[in-house]
Picture 1 (cartoon, rainbow, N blue to C red):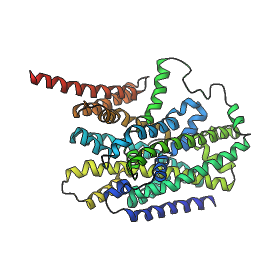
Picture 2 (picture 1 turned 180 degrees about the horizontal axis):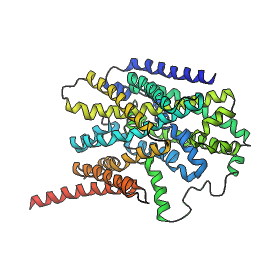
Picture 3 (picture 1 turned 90 degrees about the horizontal axis):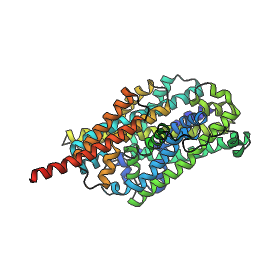
Picture 4 (picture 1 turned 120 degrees about the vertical axis):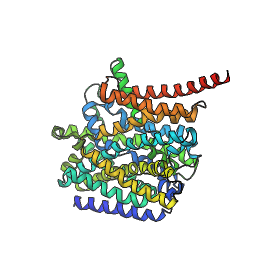
Length: 464
């Protein structure tokens, strides 16, 4: 019965995607849904796109083992990101009427920065997409014993199919439906297991001392550096991300674009606590489930110990979370590849050809992400690494370009290259105790400042 429901739900998702595809007439429809989304759909799309496997499976696994401090990155950092997007980024970028973040880098800093930023942005999505594919494989393995390799390929095939035909229209409408499923599903499971565990107060009281500590216990530089890095990884690192930009910029007007960030962030933070609570209930009621892979904790608990109705609702929510995140994350780099990397090399490209290029890029991004998913084993780790790339390369040029008049193309270029270089060396070669993304971010800031100072010095030197 449950497997039949899963199959039916996947088919329904495909049907919604194909129905939405009727609205795609040009590249703007494919990338931004014609900029016609009302608040409830735009905000739901932001929430659903982020509320993926790392929130429902990865974060609870981290939470039951490490307490509140282990989930600063998600959901806290993720919710912070959406709110900051509404506060700082949505309004000025919406006014430009552009397709991608990288169009902004071209307008503000020039063609070279556009290309370099696009090259930096595309890989930042691969780990995110791979994490969702892995989560779907875990789900199918728990439900029907499907091998992980096949589960990953099934996820890729389903999401690519409806994203390929429907673009942002398909993503937005399915995200809205999936948001409803997510909230109903996890609330149903939380209510059932919470009642069985004795209620919210009993579950919280059963946790060890310090489990809900919000700030580091020690005042050491090491602990605070990791704490700050956890907030910044998604909280700042995902601000310059194309999937966020597309949802905000697909809004019907500027005011809706701003409010969708607030709406998505508040919804993410409130609903994001529910999987964490379910994880605590699972640990208390069925601690034997922790003996295996903790990422299986919630799916296995629902499968083994909840009623059929709750199973249907929960797995519907989980499938929704995975599909919505995967589709948006695949569409984002595919749009950038078509608009910012391929189109400028072919000046005579028509809108129809651009649309086809974006669709082909959807398939290519999905295939590369699938290979990455097959080579990793941690959802949470994949997500964190993907956000770190954009933090150390794209965040500083974006914010400096918006709020510092002296920011220039040389500074933006140095900011991207130096930030990425510093992060790469610290992450993969030096293995520093302080999180490597902090070194990368600091280097990115210095790169921007150096570019501005060099231009100022050059101008003064030439006037002499």
